[in-house]
Length: 347
Ligand SMILES: NC(=O)c1ccc[n+]([C@@H]2O[C@H](COP(=O)([O-])OP(=O)(O)OC[C@H]3O[C@@H](n4cnc5c(N)ncnc54)[C@H](O)[C@@H]3O)[C@@H](O)[C@H]2O)c1
Ligand SMILES: CC(C)(O)[C@@H](O)C(=O)O
Ligand SMILES: [Mg+2]
Ligand SMILES: [Mg+2]
Image 1 (cartoon, rainbow, N blue to C red):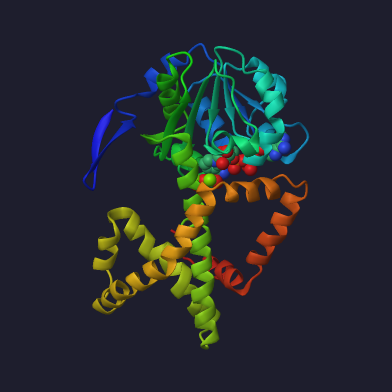
Image 2: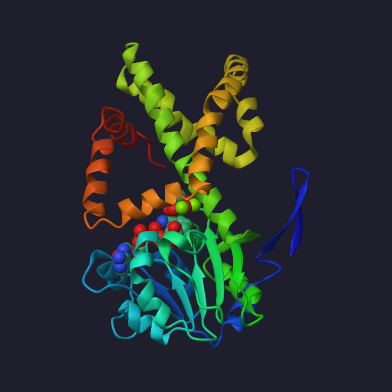
């Protein structure tokens, strides 16, 4: 493990250099890894593991879109693609990558196959942390581990194909065999993580739910709408409002932040922008802190989980989601975005 000083706080991280792929392959050479669920993380993790040389099969409900996608991606029914129960039976390591609500519904099926010596792997602390609501309580005599890629499964696959890697957190919930650590690190490297940082199941789910509802998705989308609406109300054209709200952020300023930090982005803007933004930063921080405090409280109390389980378990969830996404897609803001994207010059 490498000790890294993160702004004055030392943490241990695991990199590909110190835990190479060859060591991961050696550790899991007798294992069959079943990826249960082929939604977003399933494809990314299974294809990366397969391309890295691990013994992988996929378990997915037959007949739906995810099954067809698995076939299109090269998984062969009866050879490397099975119904969930059959894949669980064949596996020594079960990577439980159904949607968090789906994991509750399929738990009785999966649990039957969690016999001593097997390993149960999650990419989220949700099911185990909120066990009073999910009913997911693994048997004591198996290893229970987590590798949570910090980003979409789509990005996990794309970065892997580009020879790069998304970072992931890892955690051990139960170590029945004494080998959970080497297994979790091997799987973390195998699924294509750039590096791995340690957490526990509860911290992973509390931070993840806060992040995605907050700045990564919910807060960001809400701030976009607020600023766009104010600009439009004051007579600015859609293209001007969109460019000053979204396009410049994604195309010009966030790449600078990603490359070299916030101060680098500030250093590459005008004095006028710097001065104003530095003054307004505090106002936005103070205005939104109570909302973030409320969000964390909803997450840590389990109330947010209850809402997700209730909504995510409804049979018409996907249909309703599609309606909500359509409403966003067809709003003036994002219709403008579609036109603006088309105008980007190609290399
Ligand atoms: N989406 C991501 O990129 C991402 C990132 C990090 C961690 N995670 C975590 O990874 C896990 C998988 O997430 P995902 O977004 O890939 O899942 P998903 O929502 O895409 O669903 C995965 C699969 O579950 C199946 N499924 C849903 N309900 C089911 C049910 N009742 N019975 C049987 N199958 C059912 C669907 O057919 C789908 O193929 C979750 O724990 C999630 O929190 C996801
Ligand atoms: C990709 C995210 C938002 O990081 C993940 O946490 C998810 O739930 O999909
Ligand atoms: Mg998440
Ligand atoms: Mg996340």
